[in-house]
Image (cartoon, rainbow, N blue to C red; front, side, top):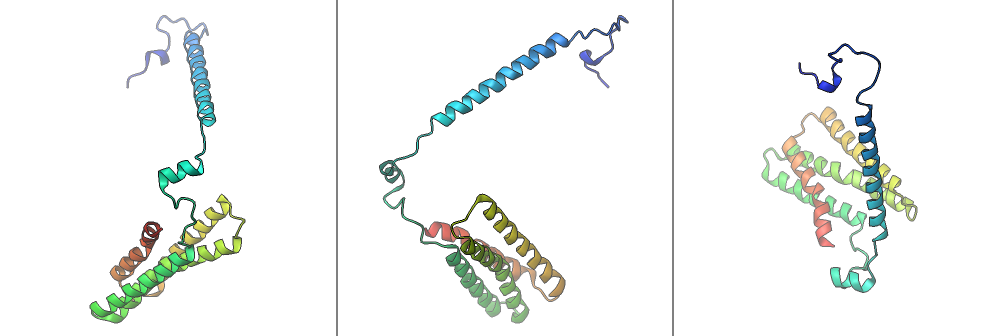
Length: 184
């Protein structure tokens, strides 16, 4: 095993307690302090240079509808997820043999997506006006917990589950967010 020269014991036997590398560390600490000071001054320069866009500049960059509120609400997204999951359930019922277990699995896959989304949307409506970052984080945690709980409950208690219809329908309903984003 190779040892750095600076970590070895002195060869000449002079263990007089002097730290020969003290000057190197002092210079290194000073340069680190200078580097931190430069980074902080750079951050301060950046913060001072931020200028918000005027309405005219924003309209020029993003179009005339930039300040119009979105027509897509969380409840519309949940409704679209429900419709897509019901359509996927119908497709699985029509084209999968035997249709019963596949259709139920597909419906449950869609429900795994839209039930937590509906809980999140209802939570947003009850908080109306008091939204903070932490309330959004807690809402997302609730949504993820409900999703995981529903997957686990189906895996343990519904023994005839057809995983392909369940997961495909779940993914179709999950991608509704992207459709809603493009719909804006």
